[in-house]
Image (cartoon, rainbow over all chains, first blue to last red; front, top):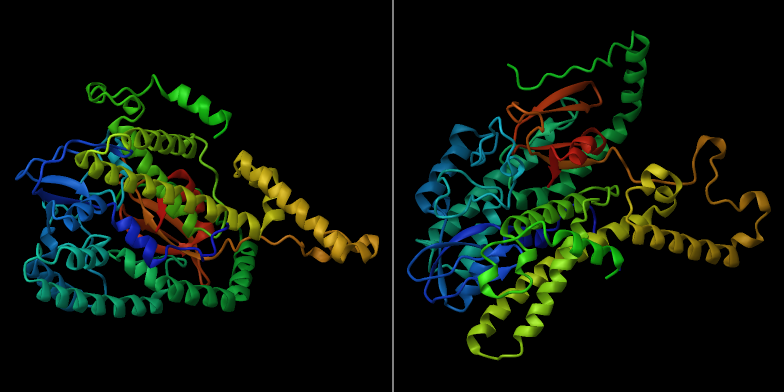
Length: 242
Length: 246
């Protein structure tokens, strides 16, 4: 009954999450509005586009009731620009994630804290040239289930593979900066969900090993700092003012 | 399921009326406004991912999220049972969609509860021994943990513990400065994403105070940024909803 899994999502669970991403479909058949648990679906009227969660879009696609419009970033031209960015512009860091579609304003809104997979980062209106958090899974799923809807599927497949390799080596390289400055907090800005799932065991293992090896040194440093005056407990609130 | 579910369903009924749902003739639609259904799915997903990512048991959601979600599922299943009556091929396909979605929700809840049970199993005494930790368990989980510990203890007593001298029979000794009760590793690393600060007027940047081997430091984490950090350094931020595990 208890879940026999380690902490952290498995690739299967990441794919499950990815299926909650919204995509744009072009229906080929009418379908009335359905009251689902997560709210009503839009009524499908060919040839009007409609946003649907990926799992539902796949269900319709398999029964040939709809076509899926690939997100703009999955087009070969966009992927090539991203790959260029990954290899030439910033050979060490990941390319930046898409900008948050709901900027923070003075008024508190429920969209302030929305995160993937609930951001519309893979619909037909999504910005090109940014890899969203679920890029790898979404690309693979669309290539497998809807390769006839993706222009130049073989080129896209090749580009995804190139991107994956470039980024995997960055992921492995990031171990060098772990436990460096910044008090053991290291940034992985732009990383993808599947990359986290794959690299988690390795990176956290390294982090844990380093922590265990350095724990006596850390305790000694902490004691020394406390003796030197204990001026550490200053509760400053430096929020957003530059 | 139990009385709290029934109370929950009574309480939530008048609050959220969906004006679109009325003319569709769905008797349960009034309970599921678009906003709240979508909001619950998002909250449930986040709760599940957080629970799967943390080594430690996280607080049980006290806003009735799980009860609400199980209620929604139950009502949807009743609807499916009604719809199976007329086997018109057109409704048949809608039925498949509805059932697929119900299965997805069920998976989320089941995986969430099972992940929690696994953590309770691993460190039962740890969670039962302090009131603050006990607070994190739901009522059924407290009952489960107590019963589990009871069975385990009786089994130990009858199989070997009973033949030990009295003063060695305890399972929660702290003699010699070392507690027999082990807990999860609070300093283990986690992957977290900044969700934006709850402060009004801020840029959404959160400050994480990290403790490293060679020095402590503060790192500014922007909205949507993923970082690796020690769980003990970000736990409060996750519980406040300013960060989430990934």
